[in-house]
Amino acid sequence: MLVALLSSQYARFSALAEAWLAQGATAFGIYQDERPLVYWPAGHRLAKPSMVVPIMSGEKELGDLRVVGLSGVVYEQRLRADTMLIGHMLGLESELQLMTADLVTSQDQQLALYRLTQTMRDHVTVEETLKAVVSEAVRMVRSQIGYAMFVPASAQDPQLVQQPADKLAEDQLWRLYWQGQASEHELNINDPGSEFAPSGVKNLLHVPIWVRGAVMAGLGLVNHPGGFGAPDIKLARAIADQASAQIERMLLYQEMFDQAKLRTEMELARRVQLDLLPRTLPVVQGLDIYANSRPAYQVGGDFFDFIQAEGRPFIFSAGDVTGKGLSAALLMTMTRSALHSKAQFMPYPTPEAVMRQSNEDLYNDFTRVGVFATVFVGQYEPGSQKMVYANAGHAPVIYRPHDGEPVLLRADSTAIGILPVNPSRNQVLRMAPNDLLIVATDGFSDVRDPSDDLFGIDRLMELVDRLHTGTAREIAAGMFEEADRFGHGRQQDDDQTLIVIKGAAS
Image (cartoon, rainbow, N blue to C red; front, side):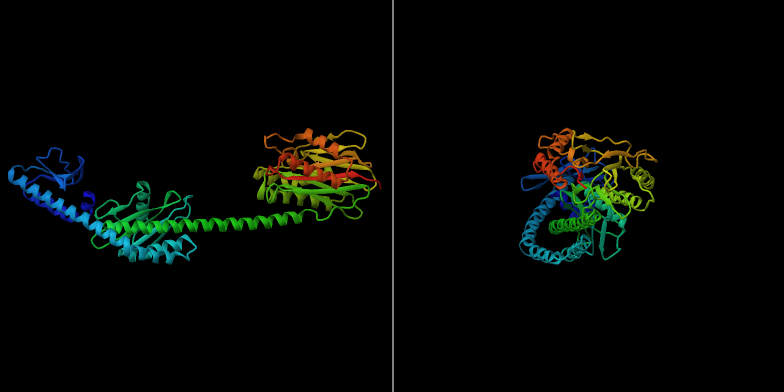
């Protein structure tokens, strides 16, 4: 309470000190709990006072007055009279604070805050909210200047508004904000000579605004007639609380808007990605073909493709770009486009040539962003019962001849984007009736159960052996079903894509 009285009646205390100094005292000061609150002259700390008289409010000691350089009964009586006057002032100040606080709380404050709430209700940006808060705070507290600022948690794009505009230097206002953030308390400056007072300011009240558990904003009021007392501080706090709630609502609204925008963009990306995949399954003499892809998220890095043109061999590809989500989807599109254009327009396409030239097109871009893509390319001449393929780091690829056990086909080269020249070579498989080739991505072998165990290659080979008698569509459906069953409904960890090709009677 003594500190508050000093802040509001500083001029009177200063005059009292000057009177004692004029009487011959070398120093005069006010102490509380053995700590100096203020003293005159500025360079004197009253280390050895000649007189000390307590300041009482009722029976409670609130501090003391100290004088250096004068002593005696007359001076002591005068000093006691000064302390009694200060104690009386403290009593009046306390009563006035209580009466004013009750009045503000019950009438003016409720009406003013209701108006502020109504004013801010339709604002949809933080800047609009800050402007409304400053305007209403200046009006309600009756200050000459107001300002407010907001610093997001990222500390990017801080905002500052003033009313009237550009009255105070922005760097000085930001200094007040950071001081308020550090102290987490109001700054009530009634001394124009204070180190925190901007030039041209008689008095200033800065109130930190808490948003989401941290000081992320501030409200300032400048030049109030007579300085800012307890009722002004209380009202400013109430305004800051309203601003806090509104800013939190704005941030939540912005987050919801951004999330909705992102969901829309991701849904559009998913539709575009699905449209890039073949819409119909190819019909190739001597083959039963089925393919499908399920991204772990809305979009993914897996792909499959079919290139079929009259007078040219049937070519298909499948691949997996490192990563997940939108970035993987963009790189997947690049990879698929490069493979597709080479397979479609090369005069004499072979898996080896398609892979090599696609790698040359993609190597620099993939190296720059630090990614790679595993790719399998197959080629089939209708009626030949022979599959030619090249495998650049792709797995799992499983071949099951109709008269044998499943075999895991190992890659014969590194993935696309690893080396400047891809070293893959053409390999040959028999594709007689009921021979089975499955080109999948690691989203199948990497499925995890609730105990975090992997499905693994061995289980996948056993599954293919169990399903091999079905059609290509039935085999694919069984693989997806078994992956879901093993994962017990858990969210996919990775994209799941496969091409099932089974030899059929010509």
